[in-house]
Image 1 (spheres, chains in turn purple, brown):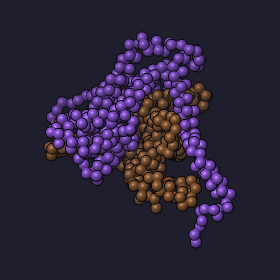
Image 2 (spheres, one colour):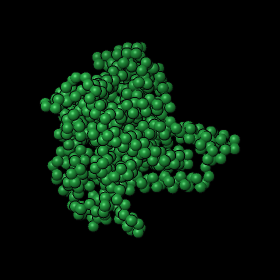
Image 3 (cartoon, rainbow over the protein chains, first blue to last red):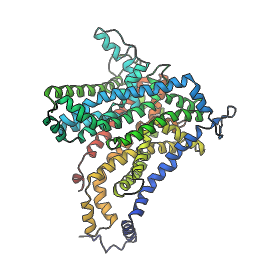
Image 4 (cartoon, chains in turn purple, orange):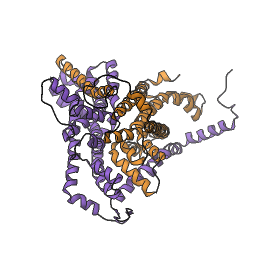
Length: 305
Length: 265
């Protein structure tokens, strides 16, 4: 038996839906608003409002006596940051290691992305894609913890070095360890956007370059690399930002002198209960990322994400 | 074109990177079977004794349950809001369209600690106590982008002609959505949801600032590692969670790349 979906529906709910849908169909602006309002209200009322309050609170202080936030405009938090040698060193370490990790991941990821996009066949490419991205979804904290086991004094690394007759490496709980672990953890975030960028370069461009007499290296520097820059920038947004905002890896892998901006923020929110100061320190990564995102957008990196 | 040597070198490099990516994961799995509670290498033998020990730990079970509950609700919210945003951006041209895609990406593009402390000070400002609900709000905020990206990628691949054909045959917008668009979109929704679920289950940085005194599973693991306590159980929990996440994630990748035509039935 066939059921009509058209004029024979007398069910009031269906009639209502039909009437509503034709109104929305004729008035796309209304439809767009209906679709956009819930997600945008979520972001504006919760996320952007939260960021707004955070930035306001950077200009507030905490009453030493009561521990309550005093809502009075002051620059004292920023003065503390600007004059303190310790906090400058922490900010410098955070930005420096984030930059180093980004460079390392570009070097590690580029050949992989190139292999996947231009050399591997469709089946191998699909498999590699899943394999390379799988670690992103496998417990972050577990993967950091694995490195603790590897780098420990009687861990896997030293055992392997000993078996090879090499001297032990004591890099556990140092900045070197943090660099290594961050590069490991965020590497998959660099592979995808570079892959997406290389895949978009039409094969004919490589052929044209070869026809015009360019050798592999020249094609690479003059054709491939410039076209892949947006992908590299897109990847660097993640590696840089994720490193800059972390405090777990510095706590678990870093040593006593390995604090990041995130650690200061974390201890000021959790233990010292000085949210205004934490907020002021957090403006550094925020400002850096906003500038970075603005630049990345102009370079077309957003289409590669 | 690339020479054979270049191809080989690139292939070897790729293989080495895969080894680099998976060796630490393999090592964690091996440690889960460590009969000793001393974490040194190589492990002295193989044992399953820590699996029941971890299962009988009440704290672990409570943390796991809280994580699952939070992930389920955060996933639901992000599927609804992420899909709505993707539809609006895909189908309509309006002022601020770019801004929408920018705002949606922001919670994962900005450092996590910033999202965490912002939500923490927001809840503090409104005197909202940290609870299950604040965890869910935090997770949903950064999960939305996962669903959004999945759905918008699929919408770009679905051709508009099927929708137009449906309307030409007399279906209204709602029936067209229910019978044409939704079935073609379903695998993208499911894969986006699965990935959002996996992300929420694993999140620790934002959660620290929105969970208060409660423990989600990653927070419990973090605390235990930090204090150096219950490490044999940590090895087991971490291994089980990783292997359990493998299933939805691989499923999600399979669904993600399925052509809409296969799923239209």
